[in-house]
Length: 245
Image (cartoon, rainbow, N blue to C red):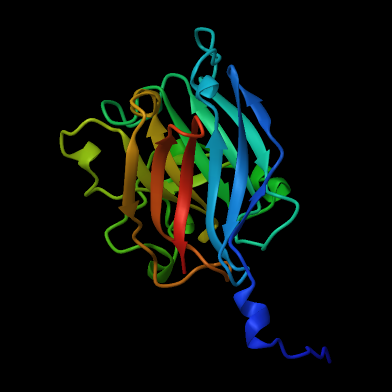
């Protein structure tokens, strides 16, 4: 049995919020890295990806007939409080992806994976419509209210993608930023803000609540909000999972 010495009140008061940084990865003409921000008690308060403006320039383009998706793996910080996120993959979707007239514009998929990289790479489907199969439909308590998991969203080495049909991009509004939940074999495997290249270049200051499911496959604190912001003082962008609960 482990024994813990009591901590006096004044010791707790000395704690300060901190930021823990992951190893930077080169993307385009810039870099990106993960961050975990803790509160004064040392608990994780936010999980994010910070990147320089150069990441939006010099990005690769797929040759005709080749996969337009370019993935970049970002490790989590080696120090600091542990979170539900194992690693992050930024997918540069140089030509967008289905459905047409919704997500078929150049954008970034920020995949915050809840599973290991090895488990992620084992995800496999016969075709993209496997997401509509009953074998991939998660229990209702693992899906946020209003989200659906339609056919056409299964991607090997990712998972199936649950969308919110009430999102503006499904009602005639231009796609700028949105929030996706990912699954595999009926288990949650990632959470994913998606942001267009054009919206990032506008240097936004955006935040929105996140619909949370009734339960999670992996115990821990999850975001109830997310943000996409440009910090002019620091000259960096940050896509952040916030208000962890």
